[in-house]
Image (cartoon, rainbow, N blue to C red):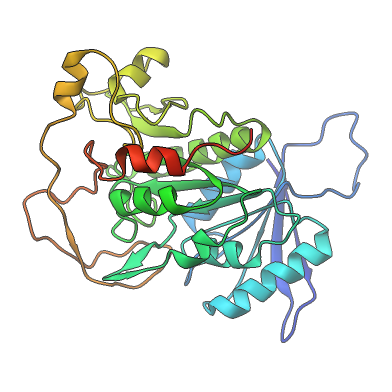
Length: 325
């Protein structure tokens, strides 16, 4: 990976940036201007060297150039910084961020924006759901969510309901075992899942299938990080594994996302009637790049799983019929 640091004028002080891309090929003109394919920023309290940012940008830049900029913890100011970077680089087409940075990316989107990359989007703090700006996204924009299934600020069921109400087409990557800060246990997986998520998002920007909108990044029994591939909303995890073989520990045959009722043979329907995972009560918590750890467990199951029997079912399917490819 080749990286170049520079600053963009902004009041009261310049915005530090890092532009990363694949190493120059022999045919590349030295020091030629390079437009980022993705303009990206960190969460509140984070920096350009935060592991979640560094790992994601490493994976993304293996395929496409990415510009990451440093901002403060004020949402309004961060949104203005986005606008300054977009204007300076003439690159409004793909915007993204993690946590608070993801909210700023949504707010900074312009009529020219085609993709929004939302990593660890902080959907809720306690009873407050931050979904209005998502509902306002233009139908012409493609949106991808990347969330850990242990993220205490983005319950997967709530996210499913919000996605069903959005006017635009959405995709989602679930990282199994990751929290809000994209930290994994054991820690050796943290860097690998971050890099893999960057690679998958870069591929998604280049080509996406509006009929396959769900995917997972998992850690297998051999200590390797694997991408399941994109699946339809109604496909079960085992069906996804059959299409994209992954050596991994045995997992329940849960629907990846329940916009549709599970289809297939009677046995798969029987599995779809299994009990919901019990819910976890969330204590607001600080929104930062390290993930909120203030979780008050109200049941024995603390994992934020995506239940098969999500209430959106057929009504949601109708509401999210793809509008474009």
